[in-house]
Structures are given as structure tokens and as C-alpha cells.
Image (cartoon, rainbow, N blue to C red; front, side, top):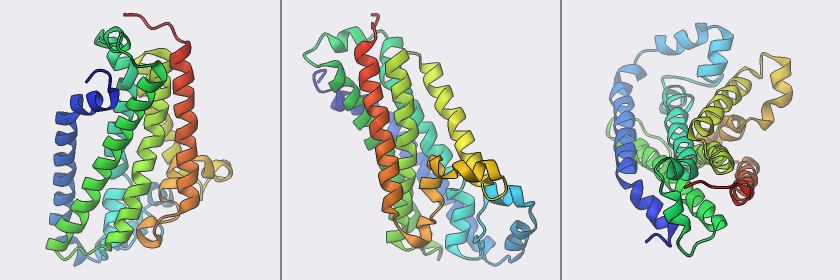
Amino acid sequence: MLANVLFKTLRDQGRALLAWAVSLALIVATYAAIWPSVKSQPSMSDFIDQMPEAFRSLFATSSADMSTPTGYIQVELLSFMGPIAVLIYSISAGAGAIGGEEDRHTMDLLLSNPVGRGRVVLDKFLAMVLGTFLLAAVMGVSLVLEGGMVDMVLPADKVAAVMFHLALLGVVFGSLALALSASTGRTGLSRGVPAVLAVLAYIVNGLAPLVDAFDRIQKVSPFFQYIAHDPLRQGTDWDSVLVSAGTAAVLLALAVVGFRRRDVGA
């Protein structure tokens, strides 16, 4: 089992992943339960229209119509709560991938097995990716099934597209946490830096229509790749997928190089 780092990591995360999956299903169920009372209240859309433009850019979308399932889910789940949940998991998984083993003093045992450092990083990365995509899939399936029970009908293909982009958003920041964890072994730093950068990326993407400086750099924000093209209406944007996947690949390479060069203590 120790020789297969991927299976070991997934086994170690089993209970946590189950708890995350159940929690996300319950979150979606909560939004679904509220939907019947929201759809008959046109004042909700009026309230969004009357919000200051900066708040509307950050926490809603210009095309959001709370009287429709798509607009409701965009505002209530996809613009804020959904990304937060996925990012907390992926950043924590990435930060704990290497630094967590060192904190628990199990890295020396792991590396004493016939497995190279590059393989350790790759398997830890794959475990983070699989966990992130699993949680996004749970959220998507919950939206389709639980939403259908309360007449909150969403097209399954569009839900799959937006969950695909959401998972890639998590993978990008999880990969950054992994690169920092592998290069420094410090879990606090590896969690804190990606979290701060995620907040900054969110602000840049949200306020780009209002701030010229942000508009010039908006396309480098991972949140732009996640949501700017409106995947819940338009489907998958493959250019954005390539950018996100390429970013994660570069960060994975940096993680491998950083871990190979570092002197790892017991």
C-alpha cells in the first residue's frame, strides 16, 4: 500500500471526502428547498438590480434573473459558496500533500519505500485532482436530482460544464498549494498564500468591468477561466480549459522540481 502513494492518499482521505460530499449535497438541498419561495418573488431580482454596481459585479452577474433556476443558482451557489467549498478542499489537500506528511513525521517512512520523489508528488497531485472532481460531481448531480424535485430544472449538460470548470478552478489553486508544500514543507504557508491569491483573483475578475487596472489583467485570473464565459448557459469553453490545465501542469512541474531539490527532514 505504501508503494502506491495514490491509493494510500485516497484511503487516508476517505472519511474526509465522504463528509465533504454529504455536506455539499446538503448545501445544494438547502438551496433547492428555498427555490420555491424565491421564484415567486420578483422583488429578489429587483433587489439585485438595486445593489451598488461593485457588489453586483462581485456577488451576482449582469444576466442573473433570480426568477429562473439558472439565475438563482448562479447567484446563490456558483458565484460564491460553490467556489469557496471546492477551494477549501483543494487547497487543504494540496497543502497537506507533502507538508502534512512531514508534520506527521511519516515522510521518512514513505520515502523509505521503492518510490521516487517525483512519483510521490504526482500521486499526491492525482489524489487532489480526483477528490476535487469528485466533490464537483457530487454538487452537479445534487443540483440535477434535488433541483428536479422542486421544479428547479437545470440542463444536465450545462451543469456538467460548469462543474467541470469549477473543478479546474480548484485544481489550479490546489496545485499552487502543492507546489508550495513540496518546495517548503510548510503547511501554513501553503494554505495561506493560495487562499489570499484566490481572494485577489476573485476580486480582479469581479471588479474588472469597473476598474481599468483589473480589466487589463482579468484574463489571467483563474476565476475568469471558471465563470466569465457563463458555462451554465454556454457550456464548456475549451480555451479556458486549456489555460487552467496548462497552469496546473506548470505548477505540478514546479512541485516536482522543488521537492527533489529540498532536504526533507524526518
